[in-house]
Image 1 (cartoon, helix red, strand yellow):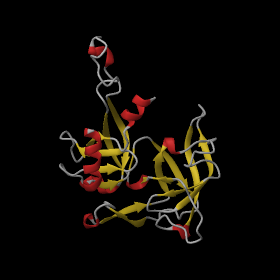
Image 2 (spheres, helix red, strand yellow):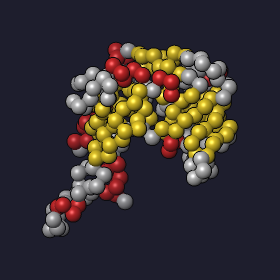
Image 3 (cartoon, helix red, strand yellow):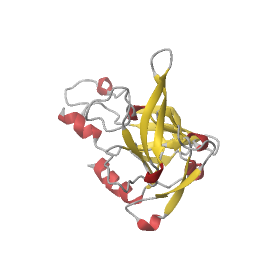
Length: 231
């Protein structure tokens, strides 16, 4: 219940930004080399008074590694060979190729973009079901992200009479040092609440410095705990 109330409050107040926590490189092969474009984004669609900000877009971007599959199932609506997705606030892109390393891991994805879909919409009416967040590689800001989760892996750790230590959640804190953030977050300030699109609500840690940004996740976007209890 507390998490639910927190989400409702933060949804009204948090500034939306893009942060890629597990990045993989995407090259948009038909986008002009060395070209940088400014795109406009709402700071909070729930609050018009929050204003807008500019996003920098370029030929090479990061997306989440989990947003690409080499052989995606039918109901996977993100990126895969021959599949088209929407880049939030930007363009439609279609995967044309990908590169693997010697271990068979995908390390780079090649796509083309549709110039007529600027802003993330198409005048021809075609439907694209997947919308991905992204960050321009050229302008990405490095950061440490601390993902806080439930301290225990059961609802009541003392219910069965066991030592509560046996029910400690080993993933109650995950520290991610590979995150790539949009450039507007170089001006992040204490006390401001952020929604990292598709990743949860975050705030700047008191340990953060201009040279080493650190963000803490206060709550996820969905009640993963409640879903786990119903399994």
